[in-house]
Amino acid sequence: MSAGRILVVDDEPQIRRVMRTTLVAQGYEVSDARTGEDAFERIRAERFDLLLLDMNMPGISGLETCREIRSGSDLPIIMVTVRGSERDKVQALDAGADGYITKPFEVSELLARIRAILRRTCFPSGLESQRLQLGDVEIDFEARRVNARGEQIRLTTKEFDLLTYLAAHAGKTLTHRELLQAVWGPDYGDEQEYLRVFVGRLRKKIEAVPSSPKFLLTEPWVGYRLELPA
Image 1 (tube, rainbow, N blue to C red):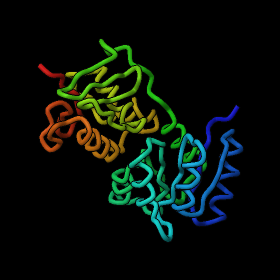
Image 2 (cartoon, rainbow, N blue to C red; image 1 turned 90 degrees about the horizontal axis):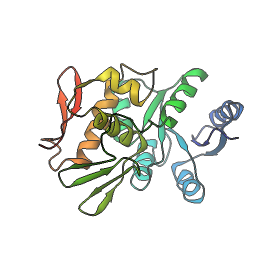
Image 3 (tube, rainbow, N blue to C red; image 1 turned 180 degrees about the vertical axis):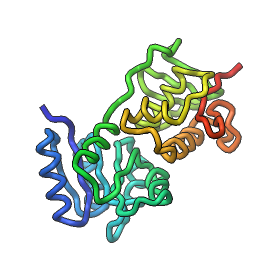
């Protein structure tokens, strides 16, 4: 039984071959694409569980490819970067990636990143209701849908997982480490840029005024909390 279908997008043939060999050995089905344009065609024609996307490609860059895919799909995306600076990591997340990995990397690190992104947070028992109303936004946790004014709002898997965990502990400030380990897994804890970007993305989708949030609040230096309407 397949562990999942992964599309590897990289302009270097050797990297695509290594990725394919590594992932197939772990039970994944793997396809590959050389450019962003090739990736668009493959995604339109086939179903994938995860996209491994090189950040620096000729033609349409990885960042542009990620933004284009994210505009119409919640397909999980891991961006592969060659630099480990905070700016590059934040750029990848801002473009819509669910995570990143920096070259060169160990096989074990790559596999851990893939497992973390494919890992879906279970429906928490702490939720009193399967539906939650935040102003004009309704969240259906069982169906994993968010609606505002009768229109469905697209959330990525990890955005929804983060929102679900915050809702299960509504009113309580959750530390950065707790949120990272609950949503992304035990290998995380110090990647606060994940939370800054993902909380920002959620605010744009559920807050009437994202720059002045009423529900998704920051506790400086500590973490975040979801404040329910009075």
